[in-house]
Length: 299
Image (cartoon, rainbow, N blue to C red):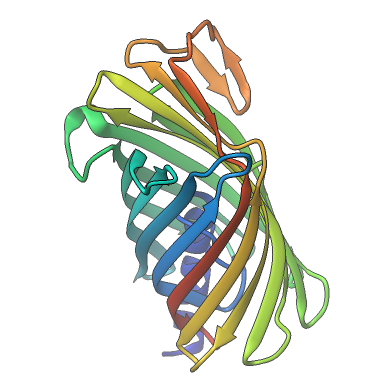
């Protein structure tokens, strides 16, 4: 691969990693690699209860170069369960996601990205119209220097509780040869230390809101907020084991009638929210995660 092609591939990968970090799991943004495939499992006890919260997911992503620009595609499946002390399932939430987008390089320092996100969120593995959500991301990226890049943009999604809109501010700051700070506010932020060729570690936070349709003419609004510490161990150059410990705080499953919606939401601010909760279950406590990753190094 020539130098120009390598640079274009790297830029395309960085754009796809930002999207995957936002809405498909935790991936190290701005680092010189692409997680082509990732299997993740997490589990932990719920604080002040005997129930167990667990999630299993698989994701893949691929950039396709077109001259100086790129088409970005990806897909993921996630199974989240809340179980009681007898291991009976209280909630099972399935997420199927298909992403497709286009990145246009305006010049050596600026680019724009438009990404469509198709989700099917329900309590079963299915692709049905009433389980469908359409999301759109727009990002303008500016590379101010070799050590600092920022992004401005927006995120829209047709949640089951109503239209959801959030402004996005992204940052990728290289502090020194080993230490990097990156994130997309208000969704996440990470401080990452590439300790050696075999080991890297980081600390960060994530905050996500999503909704899932249920069979009983109900929907679940899931709010997950976590503070985490993680480590990456390289068995080989392409094979990585990631271990993570997260603490869930202010996380909750809320249940509403299907036709009980808000007017719209601007991030955490909800307009016309006079809904009546059918139930509300807090999900707080320690969450342990392990992931196996097939990773492509760009240099």
